[in-house]
Image 1 (spheres, helix red, strand yellow):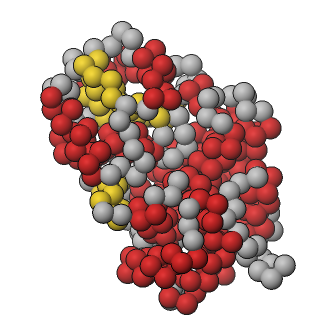
Image 2: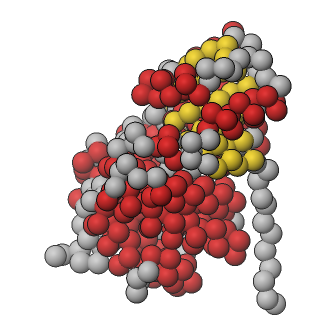
Length: 357
């Protein structure tokens, strides 16, 4: 029959340029005709946010940002947006800052301009996430897609190399999950493959020279591609696992993704030969698992869930929460037994290619 698929491309403006963030932001705020901007940035980014917005009509600088966007945190931010009569949201930072802006937009319909300083990728998706009573709920809504994304590698220079690695592997997880997500298609595969290549080039450059721009530009470029592919393909097994772990045990987002990815790849790759060969080629290796393992070793990436607040006693509950949300099209059938094995290996950081060695 040849190719047969449907593909949706999200409407979004992307501005990319090192040292251009202030210029791009001013032009975009003017284009929206905004007069009461709500500037969302964590305390670590407060000075940068102030500098970027010094000549803009900012009604409120907001810094009460919490990982995984608890519902109470979202409620406070929504109330602040209404109180200050905000007409445009600008978020600067990582996935938590973008996630909070999305939570406000979901409730208010306000447009969002996102300025990412990590490789989380949330800025390029229409996916929102909120955590309540230890459970992370996600959804898709056009209102939360940032209207404009401004990428400036200079703003990521303060991100430490170790966190850059974890964040970059989170982006790579978007790429890899996109190859077997519920709506995977050839366009997503092309974007994801180029995203893997860019991240595999950029992340080692960052660790070798944290003050260099080229590696950070490649990582931002790869993160954007990964998020676009992920937004179209949908959430695969990897993200279902990590959403449960992060929301239930409040584990650090990037490090959890960076750890779990290897084990999901080892689990699915034998049942997904086309995806496996694409990943291997993008990593420049004979097999996908070998390539990712080598990259993680070079980057000194996070290796074990036990290092980030997860315990063996938590595995049965995690399995019970993950199993009902596993995508029906996952390449390999997921059972309580093999999911327990996957989480146990990730807990201890066992080498999937040599589990007894």
